[in-house]
Length: 294
Image (cartoon, rainbow, N blue to C red):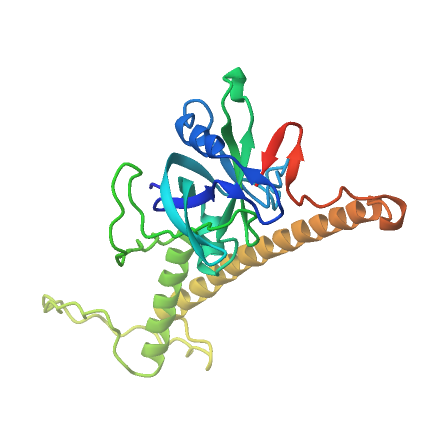
């Protein structure tokens, strides 16, 4: 299934930034004209922070899939001004979609590389999602619907989903059969009728009357031996086996959880004391290694 893609979203304009830096008109034009997913597909990260492990909280949240620039008239300081504006379309992964629904990290922050690939022109190498953009007149990302990236945005529409019922497992089928046998047994004891249709009786053929059999001692009270009781006993025995399997599975899961908790406790014990080391300062934008972050 294709991931959601934004409509054209303004991610930067030429001119002064909030923190006093400046994006030139040529940088805006270069970023649009040098963009190609075959050359480099800029990825989105929370506040430009890159995770290094698969389970990091700072893994990529999406990709920039298209770019363009155009002349826009914007309001700056209460006056209209014509500027070169950079637009992008962004393909989002599920975590970014969920954050967008909650009104979080709605804006983008661009990363510009001067002299990209020795071309003499600037280019985009990444984006950050933020709630504090440094560039004026940024637009919030909006995800309208699921659609292919080469199709124009359509109006939002309601999507219908159907979920297939999973096939019953062997244990579920076994339990269902045993419950049916138990129901028949208790129905017989109560003098009721079984839910199964009674077979049509066939009149027996006449047979000679046998000689009277010698009297046998009566069955002890409270210990009937009938097909129903035998079926009930078998059902209860089978039920016990299924319950034993279930409890064994639960016990195994608890043992795994205990092992993971013990490993986590050992890992935390190995963590250095916060008072004995210093962390990297927060990324607040600016120039780093020849790259500009706006």
